[in-house]
Length: 261
Image 1 (tube, helix red, strand yellow):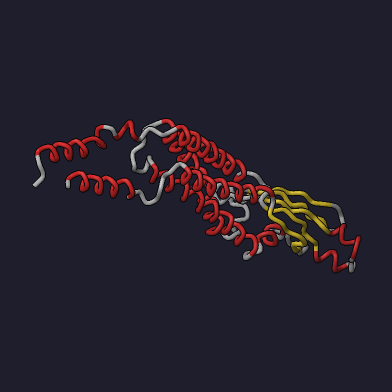
Image 2 (tube, helix red, strand yellow; image 1 turned 180 degrees about the horizontal axis):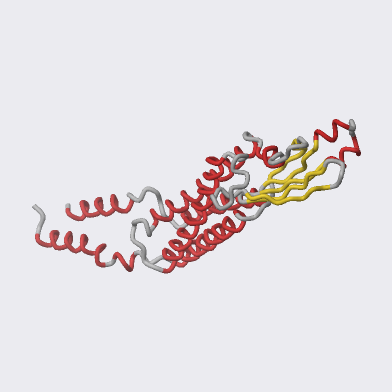
């Protein structure tokens, strides 16, 4: 049977973490700096993903007028007269169709909203909507993660969604969503021959084919967004936050048992 002194010490030990929980959760200087850096990276990721989502620089390349080139049996330098340009993003782009008589420049809209029904019959709508949806998820949860990083840097967070668990959760959602944006968009472009569909849309007289195609700077900037969220995972771990958060509870229960006996 424990003595009265042991009982009082045990009660004091149990009440100490509760009474000092707020002060013990104040982040150290190193944690403040790391969380602040993570907050800046998350905020930069959100702003960058929001900007590049609206730019028409995701895919660029050249298109060849097959009809005109075959009519004159063009080859070598002569093909330049039948080679146009194409560049587009998630919401629209620009194409220059050239078939030996000068370039015909035109702009197009890839919005899936009913207000802008252009190209809805030419693009895979479901896949395109998924890309736009995950872009919105990246922007939203990058902003949320940034706010909670700063909250953990200068506040006293609990071990809930606004504490260490939330940091891992919001960062994971942003990281996975940015990866899905790249995978889905690459599938939309490559597997569905999106460039050929766009350049031949509403074209009755000539047939065009993609001559060269490459992913533009906006696509690779979204890859940078993915890398920034991956770096944030490492920074969270450097602050000493482990996943899952069971270590402290086991230490407390073990220490209480040792003190009791």
